Image (spheres, rainbow, N blue to C red):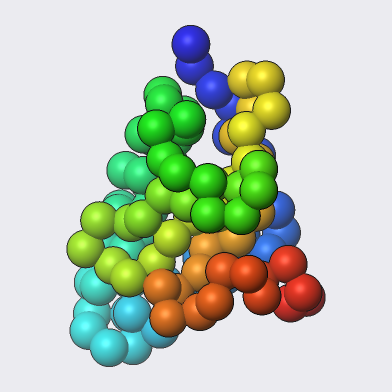
Length: 98
């Protein structure tokens, strides 16, 4: 079964911020971050239930090579990506951030 992906505005903003930061560290690294994210999103679209719940009803998929996690929910055939957070952040606090 193929799952549909939906992104919160927060996810889009956080992805852009992370890409920008990595690009400032080294030319091309921001693009590598996006490629890692796209790979993980492809996996989520195929099998989102493989990843563990870290908060009730919220799962986390870690990005390859980068210390970031995608936090998402699954309802029917919809994967709703809620946030992209650095691993150093406490996931129990992310719902409280704007």
